[in-house]
Every structure is written in C-alpha cells, then in structure tokens.
Image (cartoon, rainbow, N blue to C red; front, top):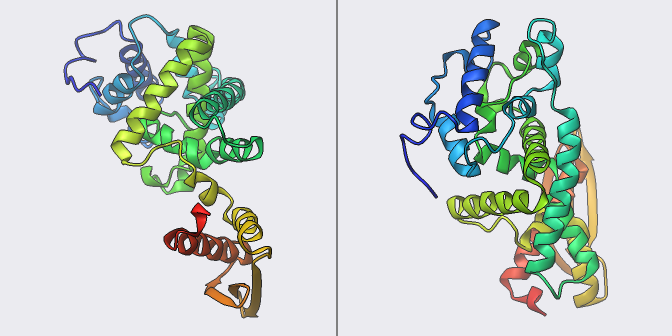
Length: 288
C-alpha cells in the first residue's frame, strides 16, 4: 500500500484532490458544519488522501462531477438541490454499481474456487454482495468522511460519525464503483476492486473472500445442510417466551448445543447456529 503524505497535496490533477476541494466548497457554501464536519476539513485531509491512495486513481482518469455525484445522498440532494446546480444524487449510479459489483464478485469467486458447487458459489456471492459486507469496503475507503447527506438525516444519528448507517456506506461504495465502470470499463474497474479487496484483507488480517462468510451470512441454513450431511437429521430449536424475551435452545440429536435469550427469536436461532458451526469446526467435523 502506498504511504506518501505529500501525494495528494502535490498532485492537484488527482481527481480526489479536485473532489475534496469541491466538496469542501459545497459544505462551506451551505454552512454544513454539522454535516460530518465537512466544512472544517482541510483539502489535505487524511481522509481524502487515503481514499485517493487506496483507489489507485491516476490523474484525470475520472470525471470529477461524477465523483461528487457518487457521494451525494438523496437527503442532501433534496435539501440543497435548489442551491447547488448542477447537483444529482447517487441512486442511479448505485443501481449500476450494484450490478457491476455482483458480476465482479462472481468472477473473483469463480476463479478462486474452481471446484465449488454452483449452489455454494451463489450463496458465497450473496454473503459478499450485501449492505453489511460492502459497507466494510466503504468504511475502509473512508467514505463515511466523504459522503454528503442532509441535515435531517444527520439528526437521526445524533451527529455521530460512528452512527452512520452501514447502508449509506454501501450505497456510496456501489455508486463509486458505478462511476469507475462508466469511466474505465469492466476490466480496469475489476483491477481496482481487486486492489481494494487485497488492501482490506491485509489491513484486517482476514481474507475478504473466504468460505467462512457462508456461515456468518446464513448460519441456520448452513447448519441444516451440514447436519443432514453428517448425521442425516436436522437441528431442533426449542423456544420459550418470558415477557418480551425469547429463550431458545438448540439440540442436534441428543446433544444440547446451547441456550440463548434475545428479544428476537430469529436472532437467537442465528446465534445458536453460529455456536453449533464453531463447535463442529473445532471438533474437525466440518472437514468430513
């Protein structure tokens, strides 16, 4: 990963430099001091610099107006469209990016797991192409410090940067990929995506694309498949209601896996399923 503190400030033709300057101007013009403190950001902000470095964008590769559009949430558009022209929101770019990402992830997992069944490939893709997981990539790119949202939306989070919904990060990330696809084409955008995934995996210490995502995404279905394959029987969930809470236990055959209390019966079953999968993995049963 590149680490050059002067890269952004010394390279004014870099699209993220221009983007930072434009977003900075938008924020100041509308007195959006509450908007994630964008009005107080310097052009040399580490957030802009890091995003630029992590995308590996070359100078003048990307249309600057489209880059800004990728970061404009509909709430910002609705509040300030009459004051800033032209100003478009990112929903159409998000729609495009969602499809492009799905194809890119399909390509990558097809290459990485050549012997995996079609059913598992489809499930693995679903475990990767969703708002929670793609939001991780958006957070890695520090899009939470770049997106433009309306003041009403910000109030819902209590003006807390940490409370930004993961869905907003996912939307911005999908829109950004949509922009790259329009400007660079599929092959180059796939190369950018691979770079992002590789960097994320290195920083987090966990491969972004890995089979354990299957367990985390839908542990209940995964457990059913495994217990049928291993024991020819399904796991059994027993639930009781006490006030507003559900107490759920899980057995596989005669074996009690555990018990969980939760406000959500579904959440309790998911937790128990994950618990069972971890136990089976620890015992080496999943290698059968």
